[in-house]
Amino acid sequence: MAEYDLTQKIAPFTDVHFLVQSDGPLDFLIEQAEYYSYDDVMRAKLALLAKTKNVDGQLRALEELQEDIPPELEAQQQANDEREEVLREAAGDALDMFSLEDMTTIKEYVTAGATDPAEKLEMKEKLLAALPAYYDYAKFKYERGEYDDAYLFLNNYIQAIGDRAAFSTVRYSHALWGRLGAVILTQQWHLVKDAVEAIDKHIMTVKRREDGVPPTMPSPSDPDPIRSMSDREKLQLRTWVLHWCLFAYPVTPDEARKRESAGDKWENILELIFPVNDEKQGPGNGPDRYRQAVQNNAPWLLRYVTTMVILHKRPMSERFRRKQDVIKEVIWLIEQEAYTYQDPITQFLQCLYVRFDFDGAQEKLQACYHVLRNDYFLSGWADAFLVEARQLIFETYCRIHQKIDINMLGQKLGMSPAEAEKWIVDLILDSKLVAKIDSRDNYVEMNTRSPSVYHQVR
Image (cartoon, rainbow, N blue to C red; front, side):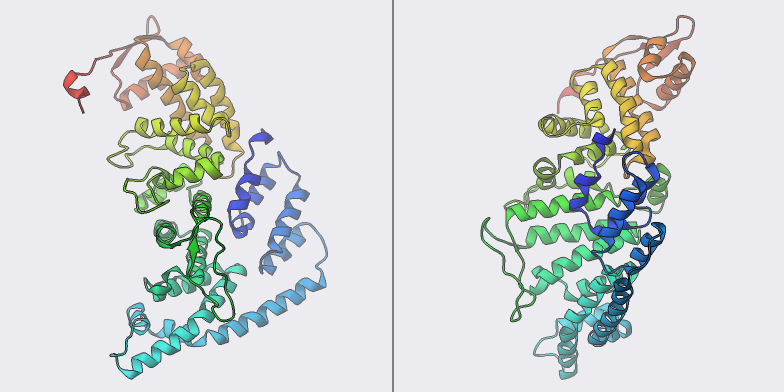
């Protein structure tokens, strides 16, 4: 199953901090110990940590490898401490204002005009002069792995800047991404949706640049130029958004229920790829903008889209009220991209809904379980996936057969006859299928009712 490991495909589209976090993808590979050796993964983790300023993480990795601490690492730690002190002093005015004033007052300072009192204009000048250093301080905190502080400072910076002319600057763009990263790394799941929507809005509203025209780079005279993007760059950034959202997906059904009970019902990637709003918002900003990112840049994301749809239980919108509505869209994507990407999970839907090959679907289902168990993002969902996938097999089979042998169905579902009968009874009670079980002859008889012609008119 090593051929289905997507770590090396996903890694280039994620932040290095996601990969090296505690219980992150690299730690998962170490625990699985199936595809890669412990030593290789730990050295890869150490190499990635070296790209950050998280010296504490590097020290822990060296300790696990039982290697000596190089003197330059201790020197780097001291240099980081000194650099942080310099940045904190430079951002002192902004730090004081954000700690003493509420955000409404801060925004009043930022937007103050010529007719406002001199005191307010003085505070505005003081704040705007300190904001670049405040941003640098927040960024440094993120790079050191101090994500709680990074989120607080980046969020303050973004709110203070607001929807002014600076909305599309390079620094503001980086702050949006840094805030989303900090939200994910601090597991503030209720904030993910707003952070993603802010980035999506930024990508849509940023100044458009023709492909092939170089962007304006920061310079001493203009350290924070207005951001511009080509359609290709927008597509690339949306590919990043989708990959980052994977890290916000609940790791287990229990985690999903816990979040839902807390009011977090965002459907993550599904809402981006299958948006409620179908309106086009300018060139390259159509409702299929994230679908295009999957098709052009990352067809392997179809594994996650397919799994999420199969696990999906409630209506997403008026447009996708039933699971079958979304499945049709996903199958179209799978068929379109079958020449570039396939795995047992996408092939399972093809067998079931395109070829109506129930034996093939059952074979793929067993392979699906092993793929899911070895996938960092989906390993906790493997058992739930089997339950939902078997239900899809049963419902599809029942819709094209009137009389079904329980023993034969049990074989297709990988169950004993007794298990299959109990499972079918529970499923009939929970579903909209009208059926009865004949225990003597051991079969299920479907009561297929043709819909009225009036119900078929839309």
